[in-house]
Image 1: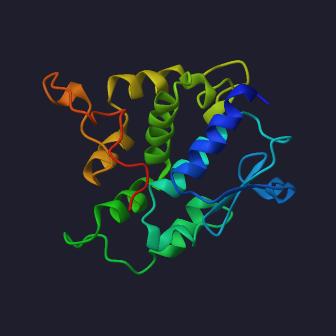
Image 2 (image 1 turned 180 degrees about the vertical axis):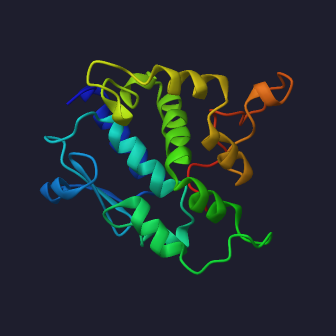
Length: 192
């Protein structure tokens, strides 16, 4: 496993913010090796993880999902969210912006932005999540451009975190004005 030193602080953080997390071998059937999302709960098998940072990414999917829908996330996150959102009129201006963001971006961009913010909050280098082989990159390449977009505040998921009140805009969009919650600092770690 890459970044084994980050495992304990990540597990503690995810638990402390209110995401149900446990250790178990049933994690072997998840989308990422060593992690399974089961009815909104993370099950982790540390022996099978590619990197401890994958926990933050999967926790990000749960965190950006409104609480009424979290328990419906099971197995494949994208398929579970699509099924949960089926029949909701997302074109309605009164529709919850969190639901619109999940429907339009599948939660992936928000989870990426969230996991980067969590790395910074925990004092971990971004390479814990954005490591060689992550996000479909070849095993010998890091997703450098993705990290640069996050550092500069230009990654699309950040805007959805702002629109749903989880953080304030990054300083690039505020004329350099910094608030206590300018991205990557968060107002709250869970959608609601």
